[in-house]
Every structure is written in C-alpha cells, then in structure tokens.
Length: 202
Image 1: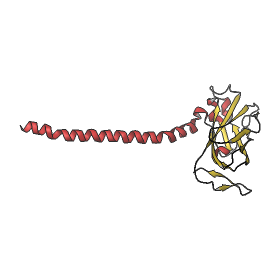
Image 2 (image 1 turned 90 degrees about the vertical axis):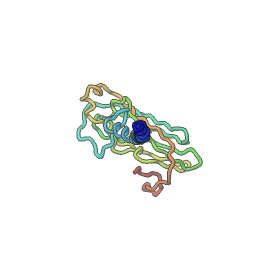
Image 3 (image 1 turned 180 degrees about the vertical axis):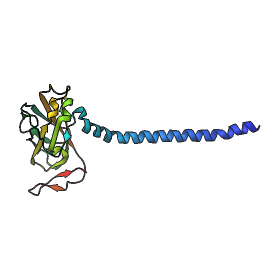
Image 4 (image 1 turned 45 degrees about the vertical axis):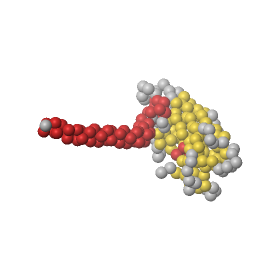
C-alpha cells in the first residue's frame, strides 16, 4: 500500500519536470529565432556571404594596374512609385582605386514616400572585397511628391580579390540595389539646403 502511494505521489513531480523542460525548450527556440536574423546579418557582413558588401571608413592604400568592370542594377519594389536608376550603367576602375558613382531617384507619386535600399553583389564571392566608404543605402530616404534626389556611392575593390583562388579570375562585378517602402516616423537629418530627406539608422 505504501509503495503504491509513493508511486502516485511521484507522478506530479515528473510531470512538472516535463512541463518545465518543454517550456525551457520553447523559450530557447524563440530566443534562437529572434537572434538568428542579426547573427546572420553579422555573419554576412564579416564574410561577404551572399554578396554582402563591406562598409569601411577610409580608402584603400594600394592601387593595382588591373581594372575591374563594375555594372549597376537598380530596382523598385511594389509600394514605392519611384523612378530609380544609375547615372552610369558601368565603370572600369583600377582595383583599389576609390571612385564615386551616382544614382537618381524620383518620386512619381502625389505624396511623400519613405524608402530603404537593400543591396547585393554578384558574383557572391566578390562581396567581401567590395568596400563601400559612402552609400545612400546606409540611410533611409524620404522623397516629397515629384522630388528628385542624386545619391552617391563611394567604393573600391580590395586588391585581395586578385590573390585568392575563388576570386582571382573575376573580371566583372554587378552591384544591385532594390528600394523597398519603409514605414516609420519622419526623418530628422537634413541636406545642406535644409530639406529633410534622410534619417540615419540607429
């Protein structure tokens, strides 16, 4: 009789342990899912995986005689009535040379619209060697109805691209941008003419 009682009393303790482990598992999976996006983004930025370019603070100190053909692609996602295109379709800088190219965007709608550009480089192996010193994609962009904005990109190709097996035979790189609609509060930063157009991401 006493043995039966002990077994009966032991079951609630086992059930509680199972419930606790299940809750811990669910919480852990939720935390892992929440962290996955920033961790993946950090991985891409460090490795250039999936064509992610690098952001740098200064120009290259080494310039090679070899040139690299760089072409540009510009797209606008549904939800933005913008005309978006590169001023030049391609350039041929020397590897390591810091150059500036420009894109233009025009708001074709009758209301102010807010956008954020995302980007990638193809072939993907070149992403880690494509260094941006300045880019409109670092900020969100707001255009008033009919407003046209010139947007610079300052970049160079790291000379290391010629020294690795995976990338040394690359001769053409394509930098592609897509503007997506962005919801949020009005921007705070202003251009020199006083027009508020950009907001720096925190």
